[in-house]
Length: 469
Image 1 (cartoon, helix red, strand yellow):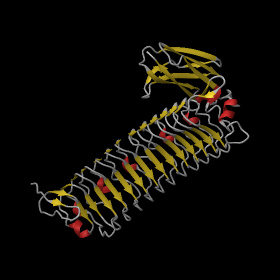
Image 2 (cartoon, helix red, strand yellow; image 1 turned 30 degrees about the vertical axis):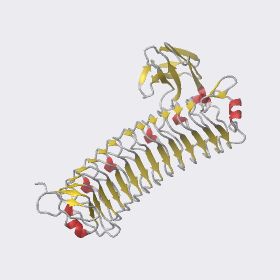
Image 3 (tube, rainbow, N blue to C red; image 1 turned 180 degrees about the vertical axis):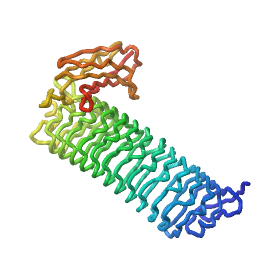
Image 4 (cartoon, rainbow, N blue to C red; image 1 turned 135 degrees about the vertical axis):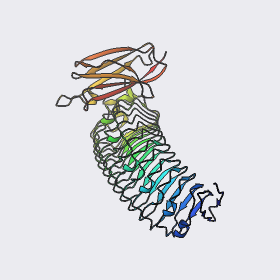
């Protein structure tokens, strides 16, 4: 039996009947009496529960509700402790917005919901400790936002989530220590923003994310020690901004990152000393900016970057004495010049007694191979040249090792697929050449990746080669 009842947003019409029924239109309920009169099994429209004057504390009258075609907003209910009554809700076509419910401690009643058609927003629920109850949700049609939940300890309740249609934003959750619970998510189409989570020590939980369709911003997380949870990330279609993370000592987790379509900005990370963990990065579509990192001593790890689409800025890193090796992929010719930068080049206000004080000084002090005292190689302790470039028919790699080491070489297309893999071999401390056929490759740009040494201390260089067939 289908009963047509129109519920207008501005004028509340309660859909109360004795039979199972479908209510058409938006419902706005702001008092417990209005909630108690609810009688719908399905709502074709939105439901808004709460207001600044709400006295709602019990949702048991919703026990028959199974479907909402629009959004469900539960907001500004100071007396609501749980969502009990929503156990039979199985379909939500729009957004799920749970915000500013000061007494809410449990999401368990949403255990029957397996998808959210729009965004999932959990904001400003002051004493909500966990997201348990959301485990059945496998997809969110738009973005996921977790904001200002002061005692939220983990995201374990999202352990079933596989697909996110928009972005992921996690901000200002004071007690959140990791992102565990998001392990099944592999692609985030509209970017990632992790900001101002005061207790966050790791990004564990993002381990399977391989690409971000928008920008990735990791900012102002004052307990964050590393980026290890980003270990599978290969491509970023927007910016990568790593800034104002006060105890971040390493960029571990970015070792396989190959390209950034927007800007790469590394700034105001007070404990960051070196950058070797991003040695696989080849191209930056926008600006490369490294500034105000007080203890940064080296740019080693950036030498694989052969192209910066816009500005290069390195400044106000007071301990940075040398940057020629880290910028060597952007320098070529005799005499050497910057060739891989699209616009302005600024190097300024770094360690005044070093050789990273201006572009001219950088070029006048070219990178020299070195080895550590224990004999292990640093990123500049081996060299890789690719010729001819562009190439037709065959590509030759010329490289030099300062010590015997295992060598692994693979060639990737710009989608991250390996198209050529050369046999692994332990090679002597000498110069070497190896040639591989490129006539079977489609014309285009490819990335040559050479890894030298044993994991986890291996070093990586990458070079870009254009194939013309």
